[in-house]
Amino acid sequence: MHLINIRRVGISLNVPPAETILGAALAAGIPYPHGCKSGRCGGCKSRLISGKVELLQHTPFALTDAEKRSGFILACRAQPRTDCEVAWLSSDPAGHPVVDWHLQVVSLDDATHDIKVVRLANGEAPFVFSPGQYAELAFPNCPPRNYSMANLPGGSTLEFHVRRMPSGRASMFVAHELKVGDRVRVRGPFGCAHLRTDHTGPILAIAGGSGLAPIAAIVEGAVENAMRQPVRVYFGARTERDIYGEDRFRVAAMSHPDLTFTPVVSEDNDANGRRTGLVTAAVAQDIPSMCGWKAYVAGPPKMVEAATVMLAERGLRPDDVHADAFYASDDQPAAGVAAPIVAFEENLT
Image (tube, rainbow, N blue to C red):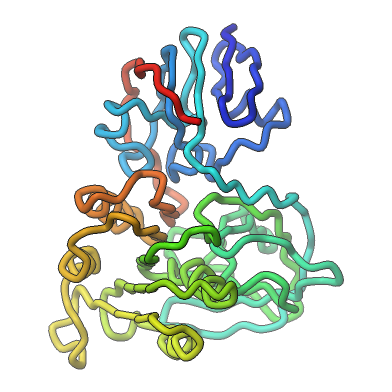
């Protein structure tokens, strides 16, 4: 058993053998920022100030080799091998209470050929969350899956965008069997890739596919909170028919002095005059330096991974990237176990 000091809260606790730092912290009631708990999202990314840990399997998106060399770890995959001191990167955990409700489906609409918009009655008490967070949804006779809220907090309904995946029981159920009036179990909110309202610099938002759901909520949250700095939204789609949400961002831009929405089509040579290629290449072309920006990224893992690399190359600090990779049900973290890491002592206060 090793003693772990968590710098942000000034609390030390013993971590049993084979337990992770995150697991021990949550068991002790510490509100440690986290998301997936399985090394996929990077929500619990932390700096290892002193000591050694062994990292279990995780995706390259959640923690890159360069970040590991710089002394970063994932608390959900870090098993202490000595006494340690850690500090999580996020300085703004949302801290909303997790609730467990059964809500009724009030509408079902098609956003695209393979994305269904599901709206649930919010109930008598509002579902409190920060724009960009997600909830665990359990549809009838389906395993629970995570979906981001696409609406702002405080409304009468919760909105989710569910993309049909042939291997996904939940998404196939939503596409073919879910009906208005059905009850859905909703547990949350979760996630650290939410809007930071104290940020005063420019904002970049990159979405791919149904990753537009949390990005829409984040951008509308920025407008609602009178965040007047430049907001650049890029939406990566495979073809023209995969693009949606343009009217929504057009309305948001009417209430903001400097908000743009740029769709980028990757697999359609006849895209009606739209920009083509990879969405990350479009961002890199338009914004050569990211110093002072805050970035929100959501969508397919490969797109999210490419975006985080591109942003780092342009000077964006790791704690200014808030990303949410949308994994399919059969996706797994990359194989392999990282070697123990030792970080230099430094002052994070």
